[in-house]
Amino acid sequence: MAHHGFGVSGDTDPDLPLSPEGVTYHVTCTSEHLADRIVLVGDPGRVKLVCTHLDAGSIVYEAAHREINVATGAYRGVPVTVLSTGMGTDNVEIVMNEVHILKEYDTQRRRWRTRVGETPADELDVPFDPSTVKLIRVGTCGTPNDDVPVGCLVITQYAVGMDNTCQYYVAPEVNATADVQEVLAKVRTTSLGSVQIYATKAAPAITQGLVEACAALNAKASAASPQEQQPRAQQQQQWYVGTTCSGSGFYGCQGRSVGRFHGRLTAPHLTEELGDLRFDVSEGPQRIANIEMENSALCYLSNMLGYQAGTVCVVVARRTRTGRAFASPAQTATALSNAITVALETLIAT
Ligand code: R1P
Ligand code: URA
Image 1 (cartoon, rainbow, N blue to C red):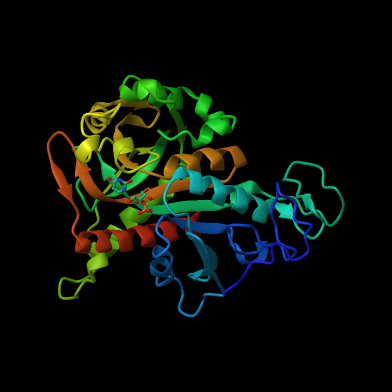
Image 2: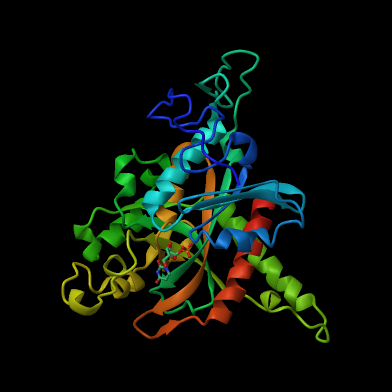
């Protein structure tokens, strides 16, 4: 396990906290150990689970600090880093800033790298292509959508931030498009009109890659001979593409009123209102598919940086007008294993 060297030399920049060895303050690794392809998970314990899907014996680096566990190995020979964010968009903000530092700050020369299309500072300055950074979140979520059962995988196309984390960053360009404005305007018609909200979009290539990987997973399961005992994780997997809402909490922020909080929420009918929305975007009619706690900041900040990001989540809670259910541990485990497979396949295909 790696450890911090902070405070050793006493010359750490408080606005760019890097140890003398180039280790960032929260994500405990150097640039060398952060692959371009990154799987993000909320639960720190899920890092080990994702690692079981990587090539045997491929883990070259592991570290842990607070809720952020890091492991770097390979999937089908391609380097991949698995990183936990912990719960919430505020943690994603920390991770995204430190991924940005590790990818684009030259710690030896103490300067930011130029990007492709910009004039290099000198012959040692190799221009960086931000689109090579690909991040896919593999999470769990609830759904307000009566078309979506528990155990289904939700693939994000549009993103709504019900948190305020990104109000501190100037909006990425995609947010000004008619499609994203359509999503935002409709969501503002709900109780969220009194809360600061924002909308953005996942990287289209990641959304498409996840859809194709789900189709390939099911084709592989269908092709297996009936006599062949199919592992549970290879049975047909349902998936759904839609808009993901991210809350800054799990309970009142997602319309759950518990005990003495009952009757004291500003948006008590949030799930019904979100479940009723219909968007008219370029890809066709679209609905809110799920509610979780990290995707909005991942997509917003990645769009600002030119990185490609998206999310696939297992639906564990169904809270719709027509039904309520919670997934069994077995349903969750099967779908999570499939979500990890489709995320890894997408990362190496795009
Ligand atoms: C809440 O239980 C947590 O689960 C979901 C939410 O986004 C939140 O982080 O995602 P993860 O399973 O990735 O943590
Ligand atoms: N995670 C969430 O954030 N919400 C749910 O309802 C389930 C999982």
